Picture (cartoon, rainbow, N blue to C red):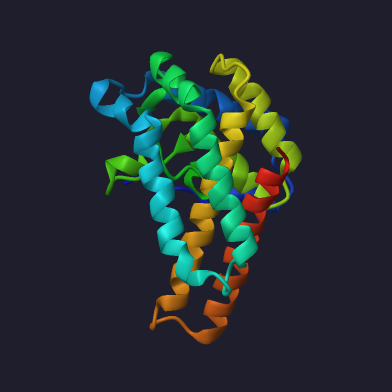
Length: 229
């Protein structure tokens, strides 16, 4: 197995302040091509229905509820949950339109900067394999994860540049509202995953404290996204 050079990881290059517009364009083109050619079909498209994706968000809220007051305050938790539920109620036609357009694909599912190598050509690795439900999705849910990862780390301009190129390459229309929905989802999931560390008896108190702070930052980002609307 060929070893991934850590010096070329997108996250490393971003942290060094060296991530360029050319790098972002290369990544955007690779992702657009990947999404365009990824597997589709009836068994995958069903995961694009609002009631199917709602299984994911309902599960998130159920699993995070016990962390209210620890990594997320009650007001933020309720606001994000209510905003998410209202989005489903008001945008069923949009979800179904995405299915008709063939936008529901066998995606990556865990698309953040640590899983992208800026080699030549760009390499994207470590997709989710353990659960099809987290991988079969709207292609926007994939690119939203990477944009959220950039924005979480202060790379808002980088995220905007990535989206500009990806939108053109993927021939996306006016889908910013749905993109925001998926960014809220991705930020909330990252908050949840970090919150889970608080229950791990094998983790030291200082590590748990850092995990709690990280989770809170992700939840705050999710809240910031819904406040943009």
